[in-house]
Structures are given as C-alpha cells and as structure tokens.
Image 1: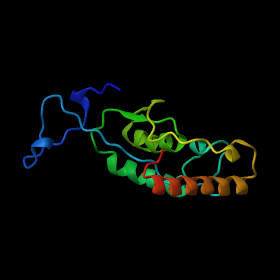
Image 2: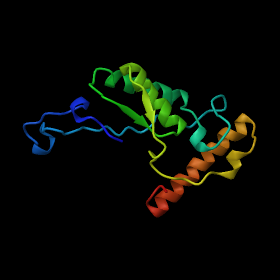
Image 3: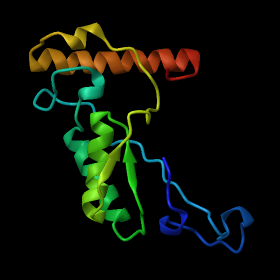
Length: 147
C-alpha cells in the first residue's frame, strides 16, 4: 500500500528524536472500528464480518471524524469488513477523501460461525452475533491471541 510521504501527516518533536521530522517519514494511524454489537433492529444477514456499526458505533465514528477533520490526512485505507469500512467512511466524508478498501487488511482471520450463515429472525441473529463474539473473546483470553 504505497503512501506518498510528501502528502502524509508528519509530527515534529524536539524532545523525541524518533518523532522528529525527517525527509520521507510517514505517520500512520491505525484505527479500530466503532461498536458493532447490533441490536435486533440493526442486525444484518450474513457473518459477523457483515454486521454494520451499531447506533453507538455510528456515534463513535462521527465523533472520530469530527476530531480528525482538520488533520492533513493523505489517504484512507480500510479492510473489507463492513464495520471497519463504515468507520473509515465517516472519516473519509469529513475529510473529503475516498476510502480505499484493501482485501488484505484484516486484524485477524476468524472462522465463520455456521449459525450466522443461515436465515434467522433478527432477534435470533442479534443473539447469535453476541454469543459468537463472546465465545471468540473467551477463546482469545484463554489462548492469548484473537485468531
């Protein structure tokens, strides 16, 4: 993912030599998506990766966009996961930038839950998404890694 250094955000620091402005340096912000535990009225068909931001996640993303809208950001890249793309889109809209989706940008590769791949009523689907995520969290705490 090439980033043009002359267009990227740079921080000048006189106290930390690792943050000093050097020719060709680039600052990259890694931003996690907003809340994505959908309620019954927000849940979507498909896997956990297909779930949208919740109302809380949309408010969080809008607040993030407000904080970043004056920053000199050159480009925005997002994973294809719906909640990540939606979060990036709030920032992109505030900055007037297109969000570039990159299929290789993923935090972890979780196995799909077969229960989410069948038709469920929205209340059942919302409960299944929450259960799936809870089980992933428990496994991550036991093993020490998300994937």
